[in-house]
Image 1 (cartoon, rainbow, N blue to C red):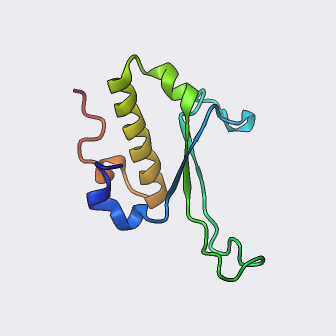
Image 2: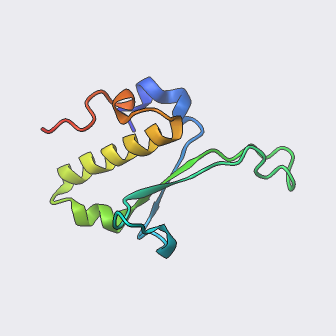
Length: 108
């Protein structure tokens, strides 16, 4: 997040992050086991129960075991997690991942 915050601080302010061991059964699709998912926020979340409760923003849920299974070492895991966060944030904002991180997808 330190790499993204300087440029995207206001956009990230409402985004929550969570880690789940594995995806739910209904999350798996034709493309195999997902690495993350987005839980969309609701503009009126909590309004019925607590008028002072702020609206829930989107949440990026990273799946720990699938990420670990695809990375060979800590450095690769770090880059994979970063790329997944960039992809999910791009999806939330409706832009290409290259807009979020101009170096996205570059091979090192």
